Length: 386
Image 1 (cartoon, rainbow, N blue to C red):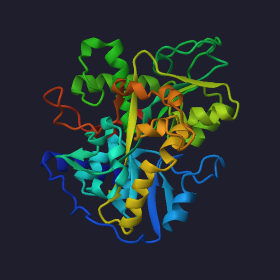
Image 2 (image 1 turned 180 degrees about the vertical axis):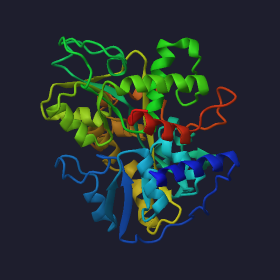
Image 3 (image 1 turned 30 degrees about the vertical axis):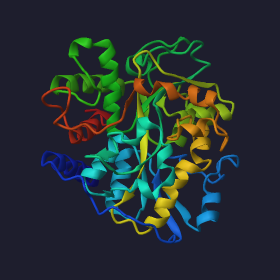
Image 4 (image 1 turned 90 degrees about the horizontal axis):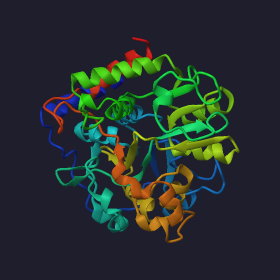
């Protein structure tokens, strides 16, 4: 945890000093592959058919490029930042609450879109998104985006819950039992934003404009809500597969989650569904970013092209319940996804998702905001019962 705090402090200092965004000279040409590429990725993001034989977007890449794909799974953005700070990896599938920290900390290098032929096919909404583009320089290739949904047990909820209230406030659920001890919350400081989003709807007098930009009063209200939630939470989750087991075997009936868990549970016949509640959702737009000291840059660029041009964006969209960075992947038959599937995954709801981003002191909506390093230390306190 001290390692994480040092990383967060470095991030805050870098932004406070107006750190130059350029991390390394941009690569201008590709050579032969080095034989491997080492990637830090979210669970379920890089599949070679081992979890389900139908989902494999690695084998053909390895056969075509002779670049062996090695994957280190990370369950939170903070874990990804820590791993990239340690080094030894070429790429990371970073969410918006990690990507700018990696840029400010000079852990990633700018990428050259000219070396990625399918860059021209990107969804225009993602091409220059602020979570990977700084001063007009791109620091990664868009990978996948989607919402943080409310997952629930359909045997308990005969109708979909309409509000995040079921995980934030003690209440009697439709089965006549309390929600206490039967709900979960995300084990990451970015969960403060979910509390802030809830308060935006239920306490408008706080004046919250963005769940990632909170003044002291707004931040205190979010922490108070999280401390209240602490009395209800049976487990703080960060491992997707442990959460799946908890819903199947440990009596958990409602939690914020990813479509990945929803899809796997439904595929196993579990009584599970998900919903976007009335307050809306936070979400993630992930970017493949290259380490400043990547040992295998040629294979890394080949992989980034693969993420846009192959069956990967289509099949991952189905597998994870997310949306591809290339709109054509919804309809051109390269993989399993269909236009109807992308619509179901929220392709048309891009403007409704409050995408993860790293909170900074010099925020846009008001004079001063609570920076991320405070979120980290205070959320540790909340989980610890303080």
